[in-house]
Length: 247
Image (cartoon, rainbow, N blue to C red; front, side, top):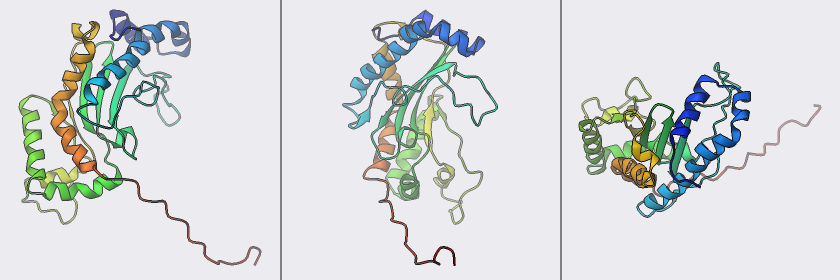
């Protein structure tokens, strides 16, 4: 299987954007599998081999709904009833108790016209969110995060917008790090770029890995945040005596 995309990969994504129907997809199912999904799975494995030694426990699983996002859209609760996404998304995430979107991760996104990468955590798990203020208040960890974000700004990378409009109650407004208390997830994002020729060569895996490693400092910081965190044990429901049925 090819471990890189082709011009036909992009043409299929453009076609999916212009003809987003089940019939169009069905007629090109084998071509989509060969030119888009097969290279994606190979890239997941190849990029994972490069990243995993640097981040033990990193998941690079080429199955759908693991490291490869499905193209089918869940339209049950969406106004947009288009059956398919017109982009391909891949993710390499730390093996935690919280799932891929609530764990530190690397992300790659390809459309028929552009691509981008992202590194960070899209939604903090509840245990990570509870630890977040402690890390910001730490005399080493807090300033280190601020320096990482400052360096990304200097490189014209994008930091996601905060979730909260205001600081939480009790936050010190004079603390320069207090603004990060408004975040419920943190990631760095590249500006979308026109697909690079290196995406279509055998060196694509190393090229993508190098792009993702541009955000490794943030992933290292977040890995430290998540260290030792786990889901709390499930509590048994209390068995009250209650009133007898029928009384």
